[in-house]
Length: 490
Image 1 (cartoon, rainbow, N blue to C red):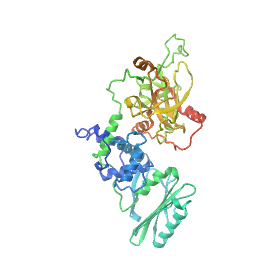
Image 2 (cartoon, rainbow, N blue to C red):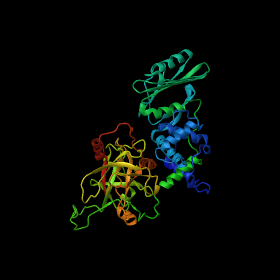
Image 3 (cartoon, rainbow, N blue to C red):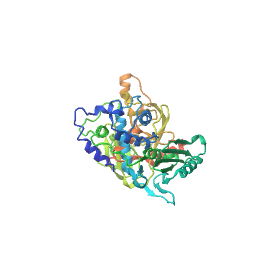
Image 4 (cartoon, rainbow, N blue to C red):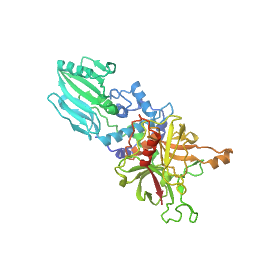
């Protein structure tokens, strides 16, 4: 059974003290030859579950595995050469999936066959005379197991072939001791049959799943093997454990580090309360917060995401007058995870499964200039650069107007799915003093993939959208109004 991610981080602290093993490895170009076969199998499972890999989970890292890994990394790394820290991100993603759903290689003794199952989600299906059935209660994935003789084998695979809505989508493999057939039905469900011969009988597994669960099905299909399961648990003193620990260290808040000051990007982002007697709305209210920012809901359990600088130095936080607690924060990436259990049951804002492209439409929601404006403010613009200030690859540049108080709010694409967290605007006065010119609408957001990684490091699995259907602007605004909140700092 896989260990809790927090335990892994504790264990790797025993190995990171070696001078030869420093965080420098995170920025070296990824080379699978440095991994053990077990580690490569683990990453292959992760790539399959993420929807990027559809082949055998065998630890043989060929061109298919490398291309799948590069597709995965392309979501958050614009450079051509993929660094080792992308493998750490994939490993973290996979650890979280395994812990949440209990994925494990199960040995089915009657068939002398091993297969990947989500142990926390698997339930018995309705059996019949010839098949033993299992169901994944969290998805459309279904399993069937049987023993076939030669005649039954032909009938089983012929049945799968007939399910194809288009014969061109059918795949078949015929070897002396292995048969594979897959077909896509008219309703989008894929059915897959694999048979392995032992003696005079064939051990047959039939899988089926709808399109949205193709990653789960690919992982399961690729895991099938005769005999007892191979190990999937990366060794505690291996390279994967090392780079996961190093990445976690980099993403942790450096509590002793200096605060950032005097940058051209204004990152204090809180809207300060009006001074007493200023005449600003609410200035006479004894409950007026010292400052405010924005946060958005990322799970139905009441978890919210905002900027570190929004909550930094606050004695207490509230949303709509209700208390909110800080679960964790990261100064380097300027992110903070909040908890508001009283929000449990509300629908969260989904993240986009892929980053927004250059010049893509973007919508920003927040609560700027709280002393002057009231209610949620929504602005629109485009992604103007894939990097932030001074080439910062953790940020994207956006043209949607933002003001103090927007910090921590979501930046969403045309499907209403988060592609970033608003973090800063370029300080026009500072730039004007240096260049003599006033910049217009140069603003920044933390990449959505970085935000997702931060959440996963803290044991939070964000909701991922389907990335398929564009929404009218009015529907995007309605979704944002239900998931975006003003955070008051006292």
